[in-house]
Length: 355
Image 1 (cartoon, rainbow, N blue to C red):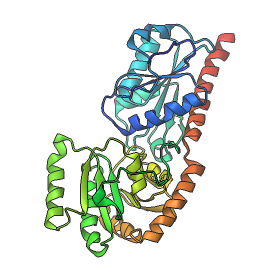
Image 2: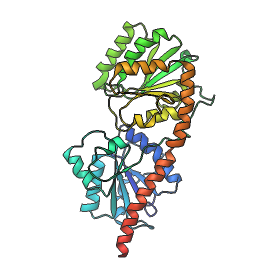
Image 3: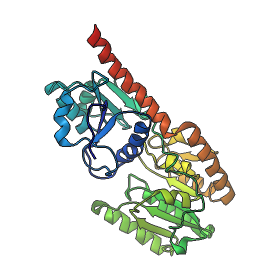
Image 4: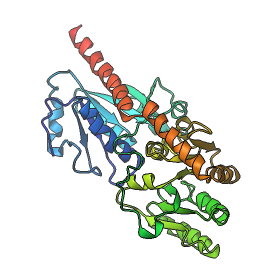
């Protein structure tokens, strides 16, 4: 659906077709921003049809200022989106303020640093990401939709019949070395024989370039005689019920940008064991909502998982995790904080026009 630009003060470009962590963030965040009264549209491919979009034919409309402000904010999250914003603002002379959200936890390339230096404002999704920025920035942590991600209410009926009555430990995300899927499988091969009430599930897409990696994991599982207890479910249509089915969620990534899955799991009332990749360590209350271990440290990961294969301990951590996310990571907090940044950018322009 399209909408008049007259009331729109923020454009959120999305220049990637495949699902990613950024995509998940945008899908959850924009409806909350609109509920809070913000005039915002997405722009580009790869997002579901229910999100409000600006059509390509409306792009020239950005030359006209919105009704209630002298600028619009172009909120980029990728290099190509920053570049597009620069072209629109500096070449086409459209009245735009450029905002970039950075989640990367690495030294940026010279090109990326140049792009960032041209932004009017920069947001980091966590303190660690902010430490790699060379410009002033605001830390605004991602939130999670507490209505979409919630504890089991007794109404979830889509669990496969052969998994009913089992305690489930899960690992979600693309199946690849970066995500640490091999560390999870190795831990399950070692721990499940001593914990017969537990079954492991792996949800996530296997791309062609990582099919050999996945095949090796399946072969390791078969040699251990655990094919029926370590299950590859592929890319599921709706991941939300699967969080509610779990008693324990494991996020063993070797590196991440921000990483929403531990928040989604805790919001669903599920205990979490995670590496310290991305912002995971800033989400989890050690020993209460779960555990954090050094990224890539197999022994520490296995031992932390083992600690939470005690059903009552996992259940208690899941309850505390839900309370923690409600208090500190509700999506409305992120939307309000970003709204303050948008307002400051627009206000700067409005003050300048009256001088």
